[in-house]
Length: 568
Image (cartoon, rainbow, N blue to C red; front, side):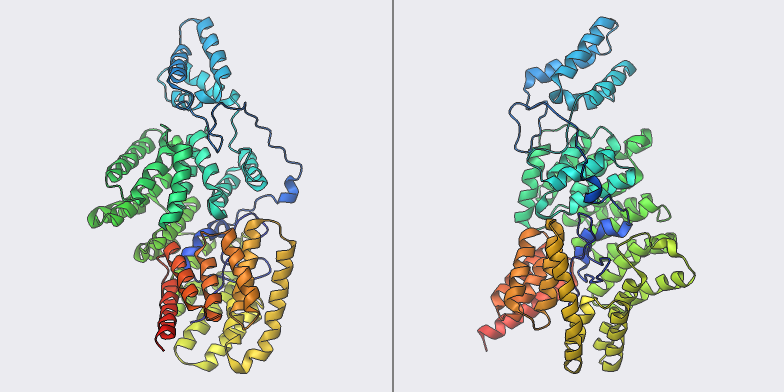
């Protein structure tokens, strides 16, 4: 079966898997759609050109005995300092004005080592202590970026500091999707040091969402989590630590996690401004996932229903979370849960805002070998367009032609399975008429011998445009995307396989957590008749996205080829 393409990107600093403004290459690997979450919701960030003169002004004193990522906590400062800070916090509520003032000045002088205990003091029963702690937290200079952070990370954190809520949410998602886990430590710092308890929780949820599945990647993730969050007592900052223990198979962690969820449920009932239904729903989803992994079927079903009861698809922020959690479930192979949530999202959401859910469901069905069903999910989108419901096109990274091209490609795959060559060719042509740079359709059409010669001209145009994008790009995420697309296109259409291999290997190096990139590398090895390397790379792709039916089918194909080579 024809493979669909990989990461496509806008000019923002994150990967997407459906379309760019010029290209419409779309992934069929549902699991890889995880990295498309920022694109689905259509929130535009400022470009790097708009922030050329942006200054990140938060300064902090050089801390003693700093961790490698620059995080300093009251624990690292020593028990004597912690005891002193606790004493001073109590003195903030002293009846004596001079004592209150002196305690406040001393806490400001202590600075960062007092930060977490001051955050805890925001729940103090004495309103005077709360007011002064809040004031001190505004005074103490903290920074979420660190000296060793790359410029793009500091730029993103600058957007987070100054941006509107929708921009802040986008930054969290972008950080979660950066290659080589570059966004893990900044997310952990936000979970720990963000003053607003709700935003600290949102950062923690994003950090949990992206925990990798393969053991080696998970070990790297765990090292970051332990280093930044291992000694914290703040509630949201503890979540990634406990959930990582769950994923490591520690049975005692499941009771700790359930306690976290129940405490958050009580917090939502008593102080709803500190958390949100979507945060609690995410925690219940993680609980359901843990129950499933520990083979507690009844508990898993109950946790899943609790999650569903909290999410209302008619609310746009709830709709976003429903798509996110569906992606998460699929990553772990829980496709029934993923499909049911997406169908519920589409049925209950404002049709003008449900395009992301429709595309996610269409990709899920296609990945599971149901291209006709995927096309049927997308079809109502065009009825809305005919009715001039254009507000649903709120993302600059998508166009109606690109969506229609994707639908036609699904139909072409369906008719190929049915053995109807005429319909197969007809829908491939229709897909390319809507979007001449649809890489999937180009590859599928090139595979038809009678159409190969005329298709090669279109392939050369697409390749040339991708090479221009690659040459103009300096961002590692963008470059990985363009390298991967070039390797996929050239590697699957009889091009220079040596060059395709170089592109694919570089893409994997830049973004080793991408199952799509490993899949591209596997296909290039396959076409080079390097059967063992193809199996090795595809096995890595499956390990990263075990819920993908397509990846598993390709792995079986490569294994059979290897076996035939060994035993002709």
